[in-house]
Image (cartoon, rainbow, N blue to C red; front, side, top):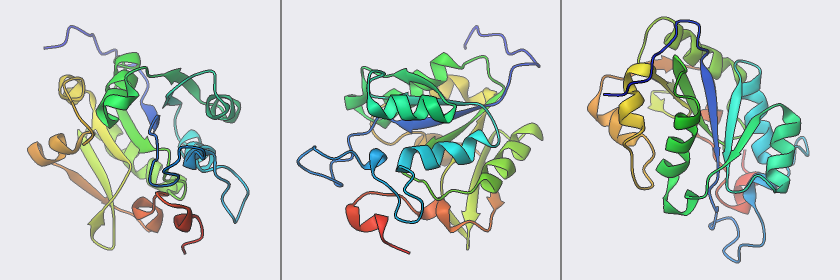
Amino acid sequence: MSSVIHSPQAPFRGLLLAAGKGTRFDPAGAGNKLLASLPESDEVVAVAAARAMLQVLPVLAVVRAVDSELSRLLTAAGCEVIGCDDADTGMSASLMYGIRQTQNAVGWIIALADMPYVQAATHRGLLAALKDGVQIAVPTYQGKRGNPVAFGCSHLDGLLALSGDRGARSLLQEFPVNEIPVNDPGIHRDIDTRADLDAR
C-alpha cells in the first residue's frame, strides 16, 4: 500500500495527457495534432481541451518536453506543465507520471489533450461525483461511455501500477464504475487525423 497521507484539504486535480506522438495525424512526424488549429475557433486542439478543464479545477498537463511550443501554450492557458521522458513507452507512462506529481490529491479527472470538444459541464459532473465519494466515474452520451475519466484516491496504487498504452482501462474493467449521463457528444470525439478537424 502507498504511504502517502491524503489530507482532507488536498485538492482534486485535472490531468491532461498531452505526450502522445499522434502518428496517425501526420505519419511523417512533421505536424503535431495537438497544435493544429480548430476551424471554428483557431484555438489549438490541446489548449481547447485544457480550457474546458481549467474552468472546473486546476490542471497538470503532461507533455513530451517542457521546452516546446505545446508546453508554452498550455502554460499560458493556465496549466502547470511537466515533461515525461518515458512517454514513448505508452500512455500509462505519462498518466503515472502525472499521478506521481499529484498523489496527495483527493481524486483526479484524467483527460486527453486530443479531445477539444469535451464541455466544461462534463468535467463539473465528474467532479461532483468525486466530491460525493464516487471512486470511478465516466461520462456517457447516448448510452456510450467516453472520456474523460475520474478516479478517487482509493485507486492511487492501481494508477501507479499501470503499464503499456491502455491507460487506466484495466481499472475500469476491474472495479465498479459510476456512469454520469451528459449531453456532450464531445466525450466521443477525438482528433486522430486531419479529417477529424473538419468532422461535425
